[in-house]
Image 1 (tube, rainbow, N blue to C red):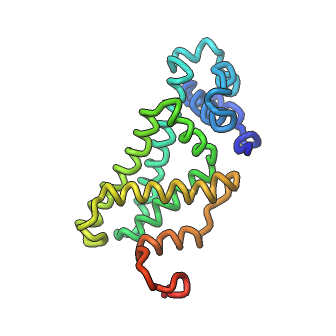
Image 2 (cartoon, helix red, strand yellow):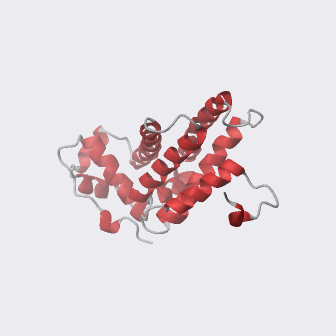
Image 3 (spheres, rainbow, N blue to C red):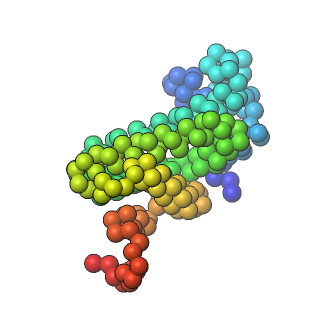
Length: 210
């Protein structure tokens, strides 16, 4: 599936060279993969002479790792912005963060492909990417446990990785696999219902919702 080809941006020459290189690399890695992208192609998209690349990054592997870190930073920045307007309870915080995550991945659906490839190209960055997300979620869980919104008997790290996995695969299904479609509100509602109620036996499923 060619996710990014018809979304390729023109180089914005008003932006700093390193930012232009990162944006170009993200699009090309997402469209073509790490192995089929060259430094020269990244520079051409960024509007930068190939020789100038090495003033900012030491190698193609180096800029790939920087792209992974930037994606992660952008996601966590989107969470922080969303939480500024969320009500002070865990259900509202979950809704705000998942919607922010899904909206960002709908705008940049190719990031899933980049992160998956990182397991082989930059395994330490791949692990750190998920650890940063899960650790951030776990910190929020501890706050919610202190406030009584989540049972204090649960391990916050387990819930942190639960959030990470749910967001990853729901987003993959409705954002990446649709080529940038928006995750529907009813899908987010179902996700939040599962988090609020868990999966106890004998509830009657969807028919048992209040």
